[in-house]
Each structure stands twice: as structure tokens, then as C-alpha cells.
Image 1: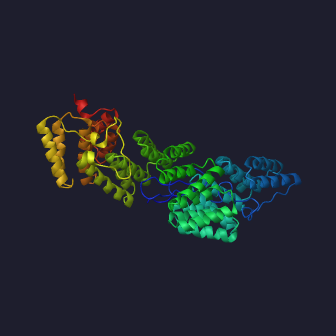
Image 2: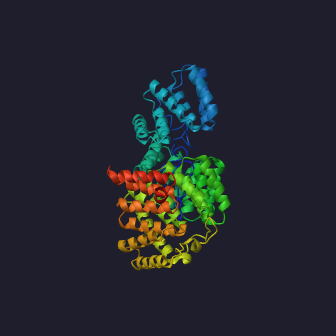
Image 3: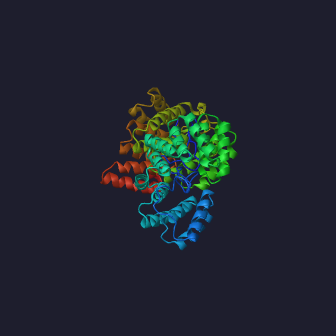
Length: 544
């Protein structure tokens, strides 16, 4: 089961065939999020109330005249009701009447944050701090906005300063707990959330943030209990409904999980994470509910097009719908958006493996392990991918995919019909058959026998596309046995995929081969081939 990851806007479930994983709402733990951090941060999620614990520690108070004080108080009332436009208007009036009112700037910053206007919020925080360097709420708000911008270290600086100025600022403890959550420092998250709850048990956000930790630790009962308490405090806390839904989905309580996600989306229709979680939940509960799942997945991507995981979620739905082209497009986009995230490669590799795209899957697992050599899930799936590919090569039309329905190829052929048909020449056919049997007898782990099979394919010359794919598969196995460290073997793999017509994959492997070589003649030759593949030309065609 893939690691649970938290999000502030309504969460999302994972995407593999493993037991239903969860993506939480309420913090970002490693991957991009589509919404404010579910702390008391973000303008004031459900409970960062200007009249409550956020204001203690403020060194400035509206005082110059009654009109300014009235405007300020009405701004606070509007912010409590989440009427951010009205709050901004009232605080702006208070600032016009009293330009040195640091607290009005800080509260207007929170109202801007509530609208997602992060630049305006930061500017107001800076103004408040410039006027009054001892205003805790301004540091707390700025720290929260920096969390939303994923500037975790700078956020921690601000939140630490807010707590130094006002050790009873529950909002700052809540937001700092969110920062630790983003850093994966879960014990510190729990400690800060506990302190926030001790200072002000009427805040919902620290319960929600603590629930994120329980989700990560797979303690789903505790997660549900904390989310339920957050909802009791604030019945309109969409994020808490989303996280409780994620916890229930992880326990396979799909009906109640989907009901929570329905409520999260009703309260916040722009929660991309809740839509993504619900898409996954729908297909786990009923694999025939593809249309409903696709609608949610499309909405998640529409709301957060730069979130790589939402593209992975949609790719999974495309895969179940047997639409490999769209699945591949979403997986490629996920990698483009987050190319340094090993988990993205693991998810992409697993989905490609389940679609019988074993060589593309192998590429994804290799990339995941280059980023994170200790990624146990990548290593486990890499072995499974090799086993499935070997079974596919041995069994042909007898091969069946675990957990997936039989799917036609682009030409309507079954997997068996798509499987390689040998060349017409009897001698060449016999050579390939003999080499294949020898490889199978060695469990596809003898490099000499694999090289013999590769040579047999090469001798066969021009043959059908399916046989070319088998040649590429053989080259892949040789690369696996060399631990992907032999540039010459990678050259052969790239050339095999170019012959099979998959030039993007050929270019990827050729680029990896080139990266392993020092400058020199071999590197120059590799760069020449890479240009050919990027132009959609195989080596053989270029030499004619």
C-alpha cells in the first residue's frame, strides 16, 4: 500500500492496485497540493478566528478614532463569517482612517489569504511587521502563507517568531504543526497540535492536522476520531470531512467514505483532492462506475492541472477503461510535472505494468530507484514486472492479466494475437524458437542465452512489429541483468525500440546510455543516434 500523503483541500487516494491507499487533506506531505495547508493557516480555515486565539499577542490595537475602530470590528465580523470581500473592504477602510494600524493590515492579510490572494496577503503581513515588529499574528499569518507557497523553512522562521512573541498563540502552533507535517516530522506535528489543543480546544484545525499524522501512520480509527471532533467544532469544515472520508476509504468503508467526500465537495466544490479521492473510491466500490469516476478525475485535473498525482488518478481510470493512449498521456504529464518524485515513477510504472507495457514500466522503476535507491516498493514491483514480462513471453495468448479485464489492442487483437508471430523463413523461425526455449529454461537470467536470442532476432531482419517488441523485451532483460549500468546494452535496447517504432522510449534509453559515457567518440555516436530517434528515425533507416 503506497504511503499516505496529506493535502489541505480534500485529499486523494493513491492509484495502484494495492489495497486502497489514501491521500489526505490537510497538509502536504511530499507532493504538491492544491489548496491551503490545513492548519489554522490559509486565511482562517475553519477556526483561525480573528477574535480568538489569533489575536492574543498583538501589540497594536485600533485606537485613533471611533470610525477606524468600527471599520476594524466589522472587518473581524466579516472574517469570522468567511465573507472575505467584505472583510477586505472593512479593513481597507480602517487602514485609510488609521494608516499605522498594524493589526488591520494583519487581518486584511488573512482575508486575502482566504481568497487565495497570496501575494496581497504577504504584502499586508510585511506592512504589519514593518509597523509593529512585535505583532505575533502578522508572523503567524505570513508563516501560513509561506507554507501554502511551499516555502517551509521560511514559514518555520515566521511561526517560531510568532510563538516566541506569544507562547499562547494556538494558531501559530497549529500552523507550525502543518509545517512539520510537510517535512515528515510527525512527532513534532503531534506535539504542536497537542499544544494548540491544550491552549484552545475550540480550534478545529489542530485536530485535522493531527488526523493527517494518524493517516500517515495508518492509524485510521484515531484519524476518524480527530476528524469527527474537528467536524463537531466546525460542521462546515470541508477538509475534515475529506480526511475522514480518506480514512474510511482506507478501512474499505466505501459507502461512508464516499458520503464524507460528497459532503466535502458540497462544502468546497473546488476541492481537487476530494474529487480525486472520490474517483478512486468509486472504482474500488464498483469497477463499472467508470463514467462517474472519470467525471471526478477530470474535475480534479481541471481544478489542479499542475498536481502530478491527480493525473495519475485519472490515468488509473483510463487504464480501467482500457484507453492506453490517454492513460499514457496522463502518466507522461505526471512525470513532466514532478520529475524528481520517486513515488510518481512507482505509480506510473505499476499502471504501465498492468497494461502489459513492461519495458516502459521498467524504465519508470529504474528512474524511481535512481531517485530513491531504498524505495522498497519500486524494487518489489520491478521484480513483479520482470516476472510478468517473462510469463507474457512464455505464454503468449494464454497470458492473463491479474486484476484487469481482457482488453483489445488498438487493432482489436487479443493479447495472444498481439504476441509476436515469428518470421516466415523456417530456419530463422527455428533459431528464434530454440533461443526462446533456452532463455525460458534459464528463467531468462542467462546473459549468453539472451544474447543468442537477440542475435536470432537480428538475423531475422525485417519482421512484424510484435516480433520487434519481443526483441526489445530481450534487450530489456539483458539491461536488467547488467543493473542498467552497461551503456552498450542500453544502446541495443534503444535501437530495438526504435526498430519497433517507439521512438520516445528509444530516445529515453539512448539518453540514459549517453549519460553513462564520458566525452569521446562513443558519446558522440550516442548523441547522433539520440537525434535520429528524436526525429522518429531508426538506425537502420538512417544508414540506407
